[in-house]
Length: 409
Image (cartoon, rainbow, N blue to C red; front, side, top):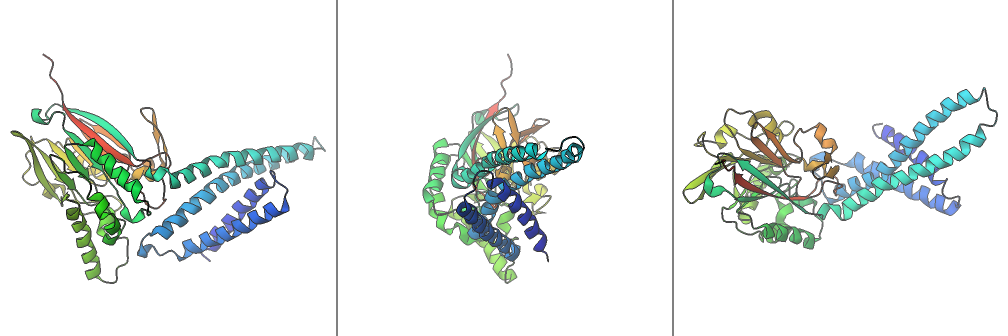
């Protein structure tokens, strides 16, 4: 029974879509092929979702199904909505015109064709966008730069650069190693003083990273080091393991990936970074999230840190900043997060406009935010998850330059 309602909804959507297709062709063979292909894809998608076991995690097949579903049904749902609204308006107008105009069909029939063709034209926009996102967009890496000024930044750290990457999600990659190698080379070209990774190196299993170890070992060694933290996916909690021992072993294997890639994994701890006689503190917090558990312990992570120290916090989920860090009695200068991916879907006009549905869940979801001189930067993510693509919100390599505010003479 649970699959009947979705199936009924899809049938209604398909009916309206077929009516729109009929306005651009009367060829019976084309219409028959369209019906057969649509029916086969619809049954395949319904079966795939009904048989999907969330406890077994997402794999490349489930990613493909999600991508196909969005690619096929977002445009068709749009067609349905346009034609359904038009049907309602036709019904209202027909009720009125039945009293005043006996030739109303001469008006309704041409208008129906026109609206159907407009709906088909509009539907090509999300179809083309989603197709682009699945083929090109998911590897369309962008280097985004940000310069931040602080009064109390130690003089010797003035001009220090940080490259941040986040949310690799190696289990989602296809076999196109050249695209990933290109992104690694792009990271290396930035030649920043510090390289930071803010969590979610896999989807669930440590073995997902095995084909990519050699590629990511190509990341350069910065002057101030390479540091990383864990994200919600790295704990393996989205999979029904056969035993606690197997789950624990996978978690240990995930942590060992960071060592293999020459990253220092910070687990609720901090490290002091030195330049000359000055130092700043890098704090690495385990995952802390409203929706995905609170392994993070800021108090433990900042053990031994002084109030006057310049502090950079790595915390995977930006809700940690919103709920604890931004108004904390201790002044945390900069927090680096990821997690949201910007939903991998949205609209961005740099410097002018930024929108994604994810903003209704997370107040800080992409880019830079500030509160009382405390900053958070939310990286849009390196990889992808669920939808195997990116539309409008591109994979990101962030470069942040720390600058000391110059006092006026």
